[in-house]
Length: 288
Image (cartoon, rainbow, N blue to C red; front, side):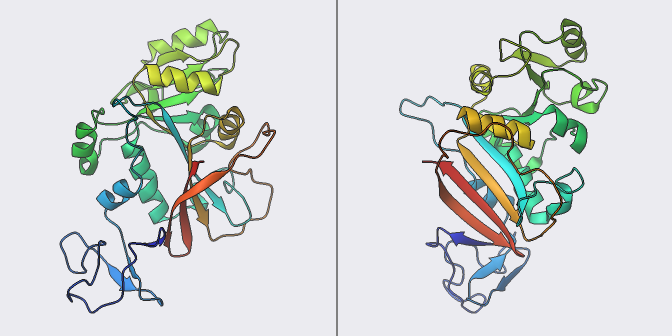
């Protein structure tokens, strides 16, 4: 993997072991460096460690006074022609580096917010504890793993799945005040924590972010799906988008990364960083 933007830490080609051979990016042959090569421009191209990825995707520092406010980031993948999935799933358009970043973003989050349809299609399971991130999470005052928060109006979910029966921290369900009482009871009996974030049957993204913040979850990550992300974009609650651009063309009628209601005026985001590996681009944009 190599950094394309910002460019201040790109490495000038030098012989392995030569002084300054990997300025700020690790020296080939050092412990923990598993592979490396020089690309045509002489930039060091190697697999980044999880610590390096975690530093690259660190959340914003607390505001003045040390108080954290919720920061909602999305992590999505898209093909060159705009498909967010192939045959209903995102895995076919992903890659190993994308999955390393996927795991890193999860490891940095307090809670992962996901739509009910994505839970059903992708076969969501509870987040697992990872020893590589244990010390970082403890230092940040986080639980061993992020909670999964499922957004569902109908509560049409299989509460016998491990996501509900065996998570390390209770799974949250974000729903509306008018949701079916029987389904709410079934969710709570399965061990889920139901969070009301809307007056009707549906969920208001603004209220969902606020409700998660009140529970102490300020590092928010959403993995979609497209309909949920579209609602977040339209509501103006999205702070950051981590988008993997897959060097593939699929055609067909697959969804974009965000769907649903449009915004009156397109919102501008600024490029924070851009990484590349094997033709995949890993971009990070934040609201201006």
